[in-house]
Length: 150
Image (cartoon, rainbow, N blue to C red; front, side):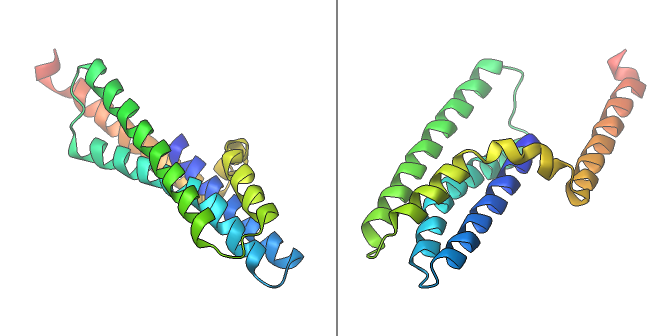
């Protein structure tokens, strides 16, 4: 759940920085640069969270913690590689790059983890965490009530 909140906080930060850059520079260069800088980090993190959720949904987590840890390490490497590729593409393809906007979007997206406590207090995310908690309680009670576990 913390990863989903982190992705939500990063999305809020990237959009907020982009709007602030639009108010600062009405031409849109700073806004596009902030979206490119923060969005490249956000998209790579989003891809990793989606991969982890799909992996959990498929149920491929075996009891072996070593294979699970190794696969997360490999996924993290690919996330870093994707971030670097997206940042390089943003710098090379955006012709009038506004460096202040680009670095602001990048830095604020990287520090968005500090907003997770504030994002988690929103009622939308509280309902998601309550639903997740209720599902976990159902699984635990069904496992403890089954005669096969005894």
